[in-house]
Length: 83
Image 1 (cartoon, rainbow, N blue to C red):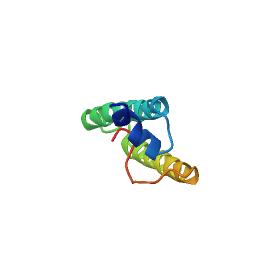
Image 2 (image 1 turned 45 degrees about the vertical axis):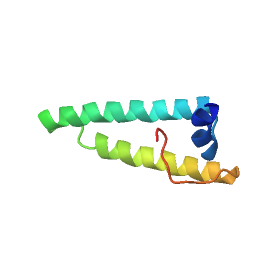
Image 3 (image 1 turned 45 degrees about the horizontal axis):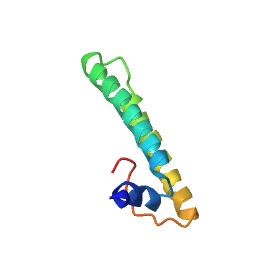
Image 4 (image 1 turned 90 degrees about the vertical axis):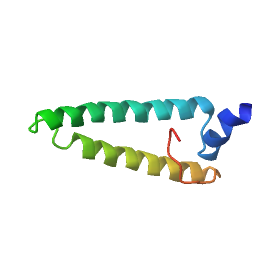
């Protein structure tokens, strides 16, 4: 049972707690960006680049982390935080 909680985090070079914190960080950023996108739909002059900027930022964070994890000998399996 413990393996279910530790196998994927270990594969990206993180402990369970580190992986949870990272996934929560991604979730918070995506939630905030989704609210900005929703408001942009109603008020097109607001949050013109927030959604796309958030996607780029999160993608860069994920790729940088994947490279860091690979440098520590962890295999890179192409999965994202929160998978």
